[in-house]
Length: 244
Image (cartoon, rainbow, N blue to C red; front, side, top):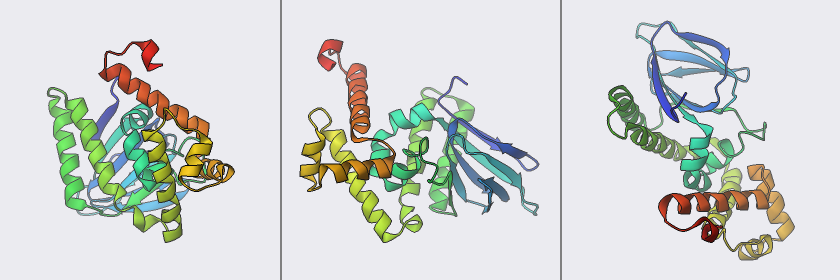
């Protein structure tokens, strides 16, 4: 309960009825096969498949009968860690823009994304490394687990084009560029200035951001400012008054 990120292994014979977690969860099929049911939809996941579950996603998992033992590896990361440590990653990837940012306030977004053997050897190596670090718990193992988690997400984000139409991807990449611009210039931005920079009407820009992220321009800008303040307080000796 005191760790921001954890990894567990579940062997054949383990099964879970409908339940949910207050974490972002990566379920990876190390061997064999499992049925994962989310939101009433059942997914058969075989060796090297992986699914990402949002916090609060009600789901069940059961092993499929077969000759090879079924082993499922799970990495779970607290929401605060994802939002705090992976904010640049989220703002630069359409996959994270929709799936991670919208998870708490937009039920039209799927509660899970299933990847069937994308980057199989690389993902397997990263999960192996996570298992070793979690078992040995050497110096700074928690930070290394965070890096492994981020690496897995980066590789999966490269497969996003398989889950979106060209029109959807184009729109989301446009919003991605806006968010990146807001992150870099958050201390001086206004809605009107941002709209002018991207040749949009301010009202249209505002509605576009709300539609794609579920948040208003002012809310997004405040979050970027708070993140900048946290970085300054952690990494510099500036007094609070100057940071403010």
